[in-house]
Length: 264
Image (tube, rainbow, N blue to C red; front, side, top):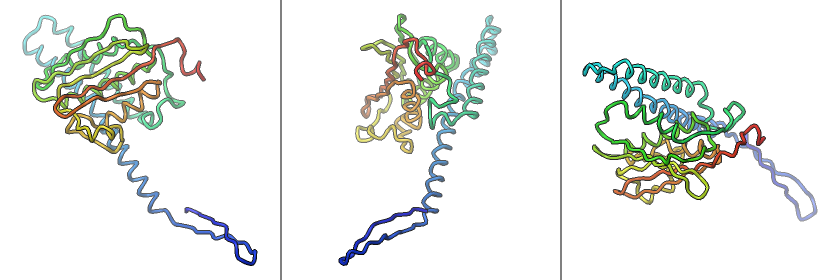
């Protein structure tokens, strides 16, 4: 129920109040349906992301067995560990998806010290283990980067989101590059693709939760990425043009030795 009140006065000096009551049950129900629909789309997106690395790891194992690789045991152990890691991530998504609605809440792991090259190596091990008929993944990460202020599991999720968007955007034989540098006192993680790009008129809307440009490679992942990165005190920028590819840059603060719990 929505209640509105307004004071009224008369020429003779009398005073009164007009009260209007509106039944907004239908309006609230519509908002709840839209909210649950948005949550369902985001859950589907996040659950789908780990499936690609799992598939690539299984393909790698199968190919190594078919080729009778001498190092098959090592390949098996490495890829099984990767698969188990992705399964754990799926379990985490299922148990605590609410963190995307309010990152940095009471149940969150405190922000801490994270080394970008370790995250990139872990993610690239997942993508590099299997064959891809679409994209070639390359990485250029400066070796002397200082640690950043983030959550390791979430930074991995951010990178996978960006790689999945880029993978969808490129055509067969396309290239997706992962870059890491220090610029103006911050570490910048950039994912660059040579795909279809995003039309200029759509760029202002790419961070809207209910707006998707999946055909251009910028889907639900970007709103999620933005919320997570901002919860660490970072920012996200997108540079794109139709036919010229897309660059998504994540600007990360340097680790200063102060966690969330210490900041208060």
